[in-house]
Amino acid sequence: MDNISIKPVLTRRDMREFLLLPWSIYKKDPYWVPPLLSDLKRKLDPRFNPLLSKGPYRLFLACDSVGRPLSRLLVGVDQMINQAKDKNEGYISLFESCNEKAGILLLNHACEWLQSLEMEVNLVKGPISPTKGDDFRGLLVWGFDSPPVLMNSYNPPEYASYFEKTDFVKDIDLFAYHYNLKKMDTRKTERVVNYAQKRYGFQVNVLNLSQLESELMDIKYIVEKAMPEDWEDLVPPNIEELKAMALQMKDLAIPDLIPIARSIKGEPIGFAVTLPDYNKVLQQLNGRLFPIGWAKFLLNRHRISGARVFILFVIPEFRKKGVSGTIFYHLLLKAKELGFTYGEGSTIGELNMPMRRDAERAGGLHYKTYRIYKKAL
Image 1: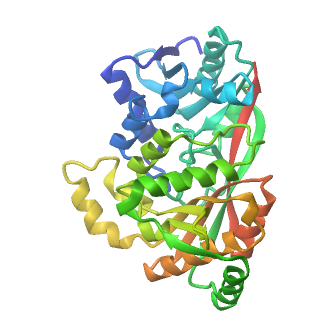
Image 2 (image 1 turned 180 degrees about the vertical axis):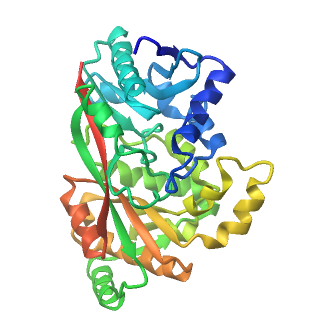
Image 3 (image 1 turned 30 degrees about the vertical axis):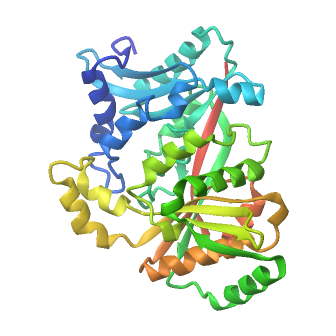
């Protein structure tokens, strides 16, 4: 490892090397989906990514003796969640590596950097989402035989060994469920849904873009009431964070795939966020929308045949009353109307048994597993 050096990302050239490293790692991998460079660059800008304004962070590159990048990662501390959850943790994100030596060296360096802070960081977790959301979250450890669905991680199988050889251990596994929409029968579900709505008094509508501010406030209300307090790594987002998420998704979202459930009295009680699987198109763009990427996107958009359910929350008072099933049913009908043939529900924590049962009852097949690791410092 003596001929490998580590440097922080400081210049435009450094940032370009950080962004482009995956192209040298996955150039022969048919399942890899190149991310949009403009989107990833925006996620690494604290003006647009609230996580990066919540504490110190660094982007690092490990390079060979002539300066060629071999490995990369983002490492930082979310002081806001540490304070809210009374802990002292750091995080790692966007890890990539050309080989084991560079990967292990950079992971160790990230841990040393966290220990050098005057915050007494005693634990590090990762890979987490670079936005603390559900995009590029965890290492893929099972299910390497198909491309990832939109915003999900993809990596070589050996990455897991790099973490484990650096004394990281499993923190939690996250599951992805596949739905074959061609084979799903909605008739039985329709009867159950109609009964639940009449008995418990609720209805499901789609996101109203003309009243987005009000809709975001309703979503914030649901998340604050529905998010379990024992979720160690998440706190309910504030309205600015929700607006940032909405801005990030505005060009990708279809309002019909973002249902909001409300009681008869108008109280927001549940919602889901579903996006079309644009990865089918992104594979053709090679990371760039310009100069001809938009044309390719528009020409290939009709090939999108699936969607991913990212989030589904129901407030405690309306759980076990058919609300989540009704939301799933609504999404199934809308997806079929759009001509989609498959769906994915992800990512669901292995310990979240109610959501796993809902996913499986709706016809989901567990087909990929993502792992978040932790290491005591």
